[in-house]
Amino acid sequence: MRAGGTNVRGTVYLVGAGPGAPDLLTLRAAELLKRADIVFHDALVHPETLALAAGAEKIAVGKRCGWHSTAQRFINKRLVDAARIHRVVVRLKGGDPMLFGRAQEEIDTLEAAGVSCEVVPGVTAALGAAALVRTSLTRRGLSRSITFVTPRAGSGEDAHDWARSALAADTCVLYMGVGEAEMIARTLMGRGASPDLPALIVENASLPGERVLPTRLADLAATAAAHSGGPALILLGQVFARVQVPAQTLERMHVA
Ligand code: SAH
Picture 1 (cartoon, rainbow, N blue to C red):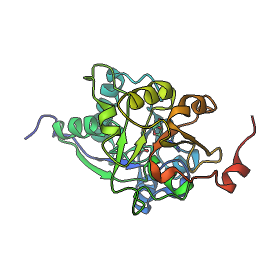
Picture 2: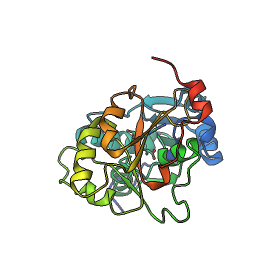
Picture 3: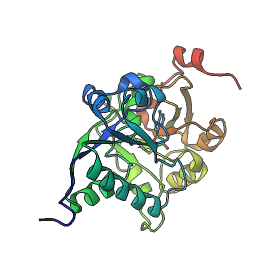
């Protein structure tokens, strides 16, 4: 028997909350939230989504920036402890739990402690953004491949050649990159990407403050300066060449 396997009552569900809008949640996720005894949630999860977990204790654990591995270890431990007390433990993460969400650390810790664990997928931010701009990420004739990349490395993580990954496919979606737009554009152009490569910054996809800023790689940093601080993606590729700002986005945009 694995260490800690005794005394475990519950199952921990790693659940995707989708990109923001509460109705982009899966039925399975909604069902689990209704049954949840305790929910550990990221900072970006919508209050209406949390409200589905009417009977649960809710604990905010996500940090938007400056994530430390000690904080992650603390969450891992809390999930194990919660499963010793509760039957339905939900770890609710923005988008899809398996993308840029530290899911593997949590799964590995739970397995090592003998806690059963299930994953419920969610709509990742890239797909929320593609829907908003009504642009296929795999448009025939222009794109047969997509990379989901982040230039951000956690503390203690080895340096990684994110630029190689970004340039390896026809379409690239960069997560957690908008604060480093100048470095991203400079690095990618230094590696041979065209200054005219069509680019978008999509902010708050699926939320009331959603915004689309169409640009090109050479102007990415200047465009990013207009970013208001909500969660944002950078999307790169020829498929975005003709993206206009959708009318409903203009309506919803708050004028600064
Ligand atoms: N697991 C999540 C990603 C977590 S990393 C997913 O699958 O979507 C957090 C990053 O996701 C943010 O820095 C931002 O780049 C992106 N993001 C999350 N929600 C977003 C939204 N509504 N609009 C645009 N980008 C978003």
